[in-house]
Image 1: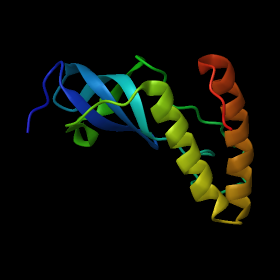
Image 2 (image 1 turned 180 degrees about the horizontal axis):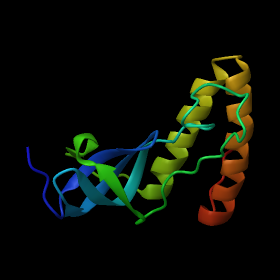
Image 3 (image 1 turned 135 degrees about the horizontal axis):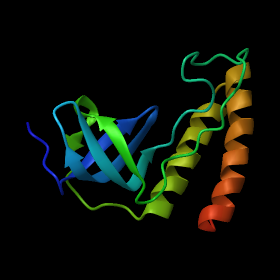
Length: 132
């Protein structure tokens, strides 16, 4: 299936999953304008997943609303249905990640929750979100 410019799609970027609009499509990649967040990126080092003894434990934010990112073409799939509002989708994705991490008492999950709390504070300032 060929993805076309202007098509609404789902796509993965690093460990996050997004809904977006294709800005340009090449054979091996698509540039996608972000419209919503389906899965918040994992915290920590992408090259050493689920490990805490790494040189730098990253606080990973989701791609911003209308930010454009190059996605591997293999991860880009057509999306059908209504596109959720960005802030609502971001909040839902953060809370889903937080819930998954709270189910696990590992050192990685504890560290990830700490990083995610810092990311949430940034979202409060950037998007005026509340977490009540």
